[in-house]
Amino acid sequence: MPTTIDEGVSYTVVESSNVFSVGYRVSDKTLFVKFKSEKRGYEGSRYTYYDVPSDVYLALLNAPSKGKYLAANVKGKYSFAQF
Image (cartoon, rainbow, N blue to C red; front, side):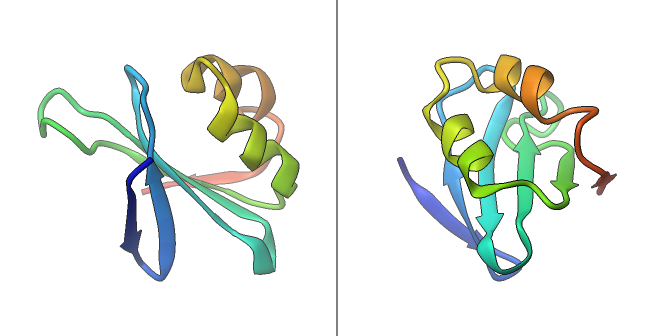
């Protein structure tokens, strides 16, 4: 999986129809998600989820469907900010 660095966080580009890349900062258990955008061609909305355990991040990386995993295990369960 290719990795990019943005805002001091390493992002892993994932195979997904709607998720572009994910990143994780261990020091404060922050999950970063960049979604795909048809308008921009590659990168759309960015979400930051707070106090996410590292096992949730690792499971997301290994999930066959990143979008379904996010919907079932992250969205609505952790506080977040959209950028």
